[in-house]
Length: 225
Image (cartoon, rainbow, N blue to C red; front, side):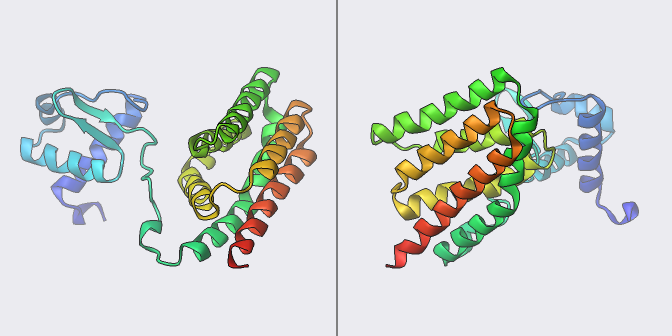
């Protein structure tokens, strides 16, 4: 299999191996092009093609004038499943809610089991931010995303960051489709999740998240009425 790969593909694999070996993190700078050429014993053209390939996979980011860096959310694109090209957005959002119902209640339960008091307060702050933006009539999409992202972080799941783009796209599209008309239900269910996390009650956290998603599903179905 390895022999069937092009020189560019093998070079890209070697760059990934270098990142792992050196334990580079998001935002860390890689060696310069001349240094990579010497390190991997390939031409400048091959290095540039390999870097371009890895950039398209959101593994590397080229900052002109600054160098080559490990990307944020390494290896995860903003639209990994091509949702942009699906025409029936309402059906897509409905399916995304169903997917979230399979995943996020357990994420919330694990967050309740794992969170320290300080982390629970951080989650509470994010819930407050969503409420503040709602009250001011401002977009709360980014704050809502951070709330769910924090739950994923507190859960300790290594898989959640890779699922996050799917979940967050679902949140964004739901808010856009329903025109943010789920204020009270969102605030109440976020509060219930926060309280369960503070009390380290995984059952209550799981139930609160499930209720939050049921509110979303019901609100979406009302768009046809």
